[in-house]
Length: 387
Ligand code: EPS
Image 1 (cartoon, helix red, strand yellow):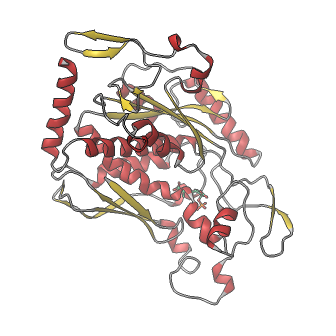
Image 2 (spheres, rainbow, N blue to C red; image 1 turned 30 degrees about the vertical axis):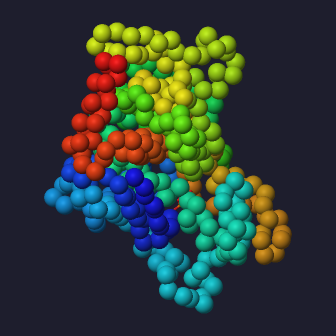
Image 3 (cartoon, rainbow, N blue to C red; image 1 turned 180 degrees about the vertical axis):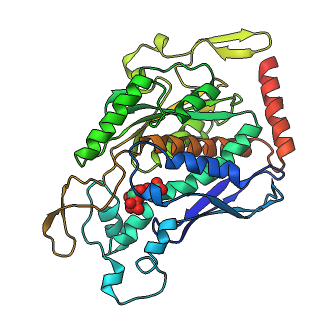
């Protein structure tokens, strides 16, 4: 499976074209809209989210609710476009007023590096595309993957484990369904109601100070059959694919699996998961410190991945920068921004992980048809149980 996205933050629309889905897979716009709505929520979001009501149009690849195996094109309109038709229009203009040229790079953004790379003297040409608005259609593509995974008995959920230095102290949950339900009702997608309140206060404080804060999100996956991925070559290792997916999310700077960096501080006997076998269940691990991944492959245990998001670099509190035309120093100022997008980023993380898992599965198993793919996955699970 593969997909590309297109679209500028304040352009008319965002688009993705997905290829490689099995034929005969049920897919409705509402499957995607559900994820798009989840991504828009979260304490700390700015005014833009009040303008947008993200919903998808499926413009190809699906007929009467089933995939055809032809490319699936998904379109999400930008409601804000009506305010930007001149500034972001495709037609040429000599009117400098209309262009709203940006010559002042914001520290921490793609502005300056993107301008140097492509020779843009108007950094709007960079920031319109580097904006996290693009995660809308990455979530749309991920929602399609998530739907496929659900049909294969694989569930994906997430929670926010830290915001602005405040840590969730609740890590246990009854089931992945209850994790999803509790976090869905939390304005910061946190399992810990005490930490939740403190996180919301920290976001409010950051906003009042003109600042922004980051955090850590955790994605959990249940139901992956063992042996997906590869130990044979670097570019087929499942953990490397998942790590790349997390770090590809705007503002994400690091990734951990299972106990993660804690592994550097512990002896091997306290890191590796002992192997057990029982009738019916087959092989499993007594613990899951490695987060469901060993040797570049899934173990069949839950996959646990954490990603760290830096504070959003668009700050009301100005930071020092230099104008690319005048070369004069200035302090960057902005019109609007999110003060914290960690809860929304948890949804993005879920969906990019779903995409990578669905891709790994469709690469490894015969996936032209949904029915044969379902059977292949069931066979792999049964094989592992009886191995
Ligand atoms: C973003 C800046 C803000 C955010 C945006 C990401 O948008 P604007 O420039 O229109 O105020 O709201 O996020 C989204 C639009 C979104 O859908 O998540 C940025 O610079 O990355």
